[in-house]
Length: 479
Image 1 (cartoon, rainbow, N blue to C red):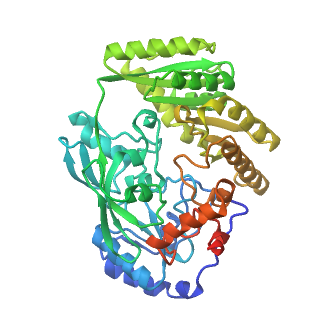
Image 2 (tube, one colour):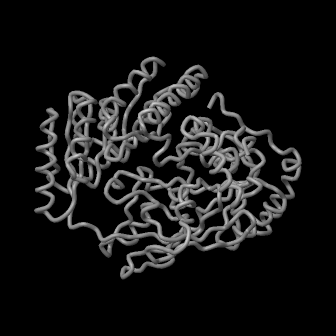
Image 3 (cartoon, rainbow, N blue to C red):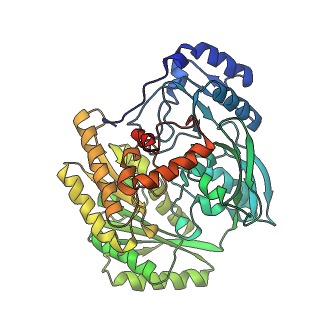
């Protein structure tokens, strides 16, 4: 944001822009697949974290893995920086280009290549949307578990890059727990395949390194994911509390009892009010905090689990307990939660955090977050995946006011440092990108960072892929 350091562009690359665009059009000749005009490039200058903006040299939208390979070979030979892009829904500046870089988007590569219900797998091009995977297999009684709130728009490519989660990942895990194999193009154009339909490949867990690598190792063009048989049924319940701390303690109580719901989502009073105005979900407006808890199984299992959760919740004196009575009511409850970020965006600019904390510290951390934001004179709205401690405080500010922009950045840094101090980490599913780049030394020692950068060196020795992300700019001087 205000203090963001951006490397100086390579003047020689900028001077060769027309030549580079001509070569990209030779490699990817299809109409509208190379974007070079100013208005067109503006669509690629930022991602969902709109505080950061930078126009790329050009954007190219290949239609095959082989085209991506040829583009990267050309860029590798000419030392041109490359930023991979899915749908641009990243919330950490992870897809923001540099002035002397090209954007390589996978949005035109969005086909379902194969589905094996016997093996419970699907092979897909990574430009497919997250929701598109489940939509394809739902008629046959299956689904793809990771479900970020942006699932209508976000691509599998971005989910792989950031190891995305979602509301229902409390039970089923995040992206890395649901991916079995990838096809990836390295910076020199080499095409590699790692993993496949088997449950566990021999050798080093390179797949574990690649998922969550934020586009710094290569461009993933295909992936084999795990699909699951849908449960017989599912039902959410709403629980309202008179304090944020009570809601936090209730979450810890549910998980501590051994019950693992499909989802436990948290919304504080400001979020409840805004989401209710937007979605008309029937949320109670007189509570300080709201929990959405969903369980699944047969009707008998659902009734049993909801009764157990209700007994646990009553220990924390909820003012409201309401169990969904129809599919329409369940859909409305989830519409409010899934629309939360967009609903907040209608009334204010916001800076979305992504820290993770131990569940046992949830109540005290929520109280401290409010104190931090009060010190900066900024409002905060808390909406997050409470079951796994993945916090998403939305710090509200005016993006057109430089003073508020700086305050929001400093406030957000304090919130993330708090998460680390209580035993958590800087990011759960949004990634490091630019937003948390300069906070990495707060969590990792110099030795830790050097080891991580050595892995980056193996995949991309010239550091041409997604440059100026993840590691502080001065970190390479450590090596």
